[in-house]
Image (tube, rainbow, N blue to C red):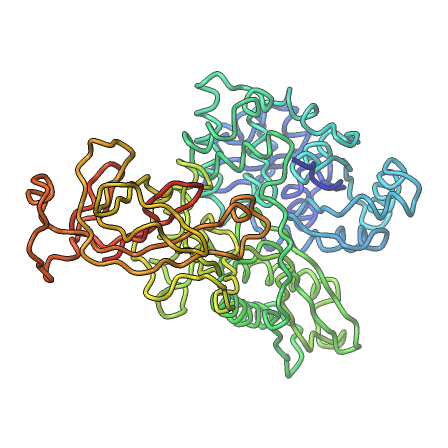
Length: 566
């Protein structure tokens, strides 16, 4: 399995505290902490030196540090204050993606080639951001976003291919820092934080205290015993991406645009426009059966300037999550421009899904809409995938082929369900109707003529004798079912690439068997009973063929049941 691409991550330590203290005008040396629900979710270095830790209750934190500045959590403030940092990074290296306020990521390959190495890029970015914004930051480079984010917290440049070794000794608590969600600024992602905390607690109780110990588990074992969140965490611990790379081409019609007349220069008007456009985007994604994981926010100003920013997300975005990120970005842009009419405003707002996946978690409803029940059903299927493995939850897609087993292709839930060329001509294809049920593997069978001799393939796609009796399995003592009617044979001549086709290919025959097991056991042909020709019970491996219409295939000198008609 190939390693993820090289990613450069720029991280601003304790960003919620930095943003809140700057807006409140606090001196840098004063201990400060950001609280939510009366618990510390982020604190400054000076506060940590006095015993303040994330998770402390407000009273305990103030008892440890009476001079502690208590600040409220505000995701909009964090995003607004972080926009100048992202803009400063973009001045040196294009293609910046905001993972969350306080962390940006970009491909390391281009800047490293331009500036002469990853170490040079890291130094230039740290100096440039400090000079432009007076904000301290750290840079890390590694294979994959998760490893790069942890490397940035340690100011490390992990060599290519070294992410698994770098991650191995780290504690499993580092999984709290999954890309796209920060536990101390989670906001709407509190449920995801709780799921990660539960997983980390379980791993520690199992004795898996390091990422390396977790990564040593088999991917199959993890998928069969844990949920989808654990499967994603296992990929991160192994140094892989949180999801396989998507090579899907984004249709142009998924881009949504909203002209703003009069131009928007206030945050409240921008928030209203963001919510309206987010709903339009998700309606378009819902009709296409897609979900967005990387969102591009673009705008045009009254002066003709083009603004653009990309937000990366750990989970497929919901309409609420999209509206929040667009609002945060617009607030950051408007605050940089002064937020007043004399500086102009935004005339066009555009949302571009930069990366999409099949909406396994936001599956289309019966009438094309995305509803709560559909979303809940999608989550249930993803959870089953986490318990049994990605390949254990499959959906059928119409495909081209000659035999019934070839006309339906099973794809894992969430993968692309592109249909094949089912309408093209297929020489040797079975005529309609197709069997209602197709066993996963053809069931072995025996076909005999009226004298009890095996029926075989003759020259030119013919049979040595008409089929008279059929039995499932290869046991010669098994009872046989008399054949009441049969059709065919249909040769399959088109497999020139298959060695079996060179030796004669496949031959298909339709048969209708008798319905009376007692008559069969006695060796007598029963009286016709048209109403009972087709029994409703399915053919199971080892069950008899009495009372069923079957599709038989002769291949490699053997007969097998390829389909069952209802």
